[in-house]
Image (cartoon, rainbow, N blue to C red):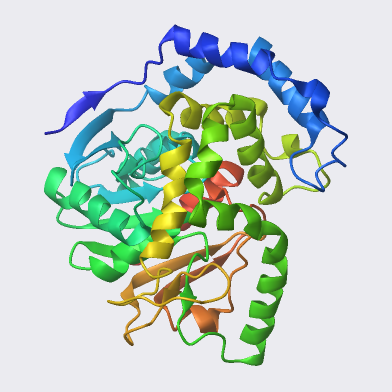
Length: 394
């Protein structure tokens, strides 16, 4: 049963968060060397001062509640989703999927342009019915009883689209874990998912790089990931231990998430404010805190490992380098039309097109002028137009 949902956080919850932020014991923290060792302490102090004295969650609630929110039970999980019906007589259907450490906050400025392009100087023929779910265990969705990987999440989201919402056909889009989930949807559910659009190179081919260019890319990616792999290893192996501390500290959760937004985004220098406002960063962080989902959201890393490192095929495989999400185990690839949107500061650098074409039926390859891992927030206009351009070709 589909139930209307409204975001309304109790005031005592907001007051408690503010109290914990205000009382954080900064005095024991040594000089942290800027952003070299992790989240910059001077920036975090300034960020938390703003959080405690100026940030207004109610403005975010108002922005969220402009859209229609619902929950529906799918495979025992109360799935949350925004459902914005598109303009015109025959909008196509688009599901957009976030990842970690993101949330539906990433999509608040692109849902309306996607659903109602005529309000922004576009054509009504480009309109979509937009479905923006919170992944299982993330944000306003319920949590699974144990860690769940992206392939199982793909099954749940496909059931949401077909069994619950009754769509015969839809297009799936995603970044970060949303891209991995979208890959599995395109692979396992091509009877209903007719095309995918991804802005993150979240998967690998079982045969690895073949050409000199591909080998060079893989070697560089491995080098680049050395300093990025700590969080991933912890969350894929011992997420519960980390979560005891994070669940007790709003500032700790903010530091853990801010470091990723700083490292994975497209701006020059050290000032993250060039890419995001404090309100945007805080709204995303607050979703994790108010829903108490830091723990269950981190489970996706553990669940991916249990699924066999994400090897595309029936059985999976282990011991693969990089992120370990691999396609082509059974000789198949994602056959539905696939659009690859390459944002230049994507931290999981895209493989050469030759490599991607062994994994996907690539029908659109777009290289953007700016943006990074959080494409919808960093260069949302380009992302929206690239989706529209792709769907016009289907």
